[in-house]
Length: 110
Image (cartoon, rainbow, N blue to C red; front, top):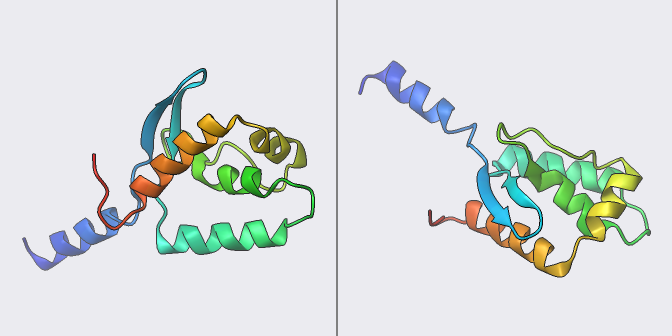
């Protein structure tokens, strides 16, 4: 592999594809594989929209749930959306969070 190919390979890795999972009663859900940049930007947007309204989980889910291209489906600043996400059943939250944790671990398993 020459230098240019190596650079291209490394840069391609900076845009990881989201992970698809099947969630009972919902169907396919995609979660973002977070880069260091994504994690920092998510933290900033969550902090900027922090309120004492019980929607912390919804805001977090809004930063990780995406479409098959990795684009966010929900706006962290949209109170109605984060409220609805906060009200998802625990089994749904757990499935999404486990997939996100697995996708973002140092040793993800297929």
